[in-house]
Image (tube, one colour):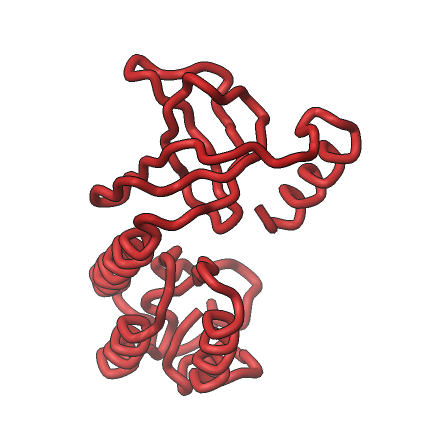
Length: 199
């Protein structure tokens, strides 16, 4: 929620920025193609421009696949709401915009790195669009447009990423997975994956 150790302490978090770096490095070193995203709060009480700069610089150097950024907002009956040194709302918004732009940049870099790779996907469109494409969702949380000629809703398979333009990804269907995506066991596995955020 921040990459400044001082702000993390004020948030009563039990970890430091070095712990974030260690965790991200461990995951990216051991899981090929993993998509790591994070939630960040901009303008937490007591956050100075230096704290914000620390967070922005730290995030810029992390191999993230995207960021969810929220300007801090007061919530009744919370410890943070009674803290001194509240950050002006306009600064919270400005800092949030800067962090979101970092997140967009990181997302583009991550998606560009997928070009030519094979991803496991599930088809999420019930019909193709006006250009003949269907939407699929990969196991590392990427929306992929596929030619809809040979695939059906709910099918599991492998797609080769052929084009990445800005934040849009296109691919071609490579192969079907052997198991029947409509079987009871497959549906149960899919439901479990969706509920735990592992798909």
